[in-house]
Amino acid sequence: MDNRIGVIAIIIEDKESVQKANAVMSEYSDMIVGRMGIPYKEKNVSVISIIVDGNTDEIGALSGKLGNIPGVMVKSALTKK
Image (cartoon, rainbow, N blue to C red; front, top):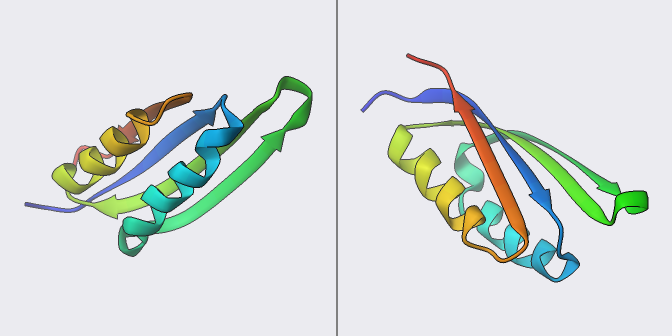
């Protein structure tokens, strides 16, 4: 299976979920190329974007685990090749 480049956008509405999300991202750190996180205190959310390089199964597993955390919303976009 070929690797793809992608971006995963994460919005965390529950501060209790930040550590859980960080733990999941640490599990997949080998495919994370870059990460930017912004705590938006005025709206009580954290916004994180990560650039990934992996196959669709790996990226899907990361997105799925993040999306299963309460208070976390995830969207991803991948290159076609």
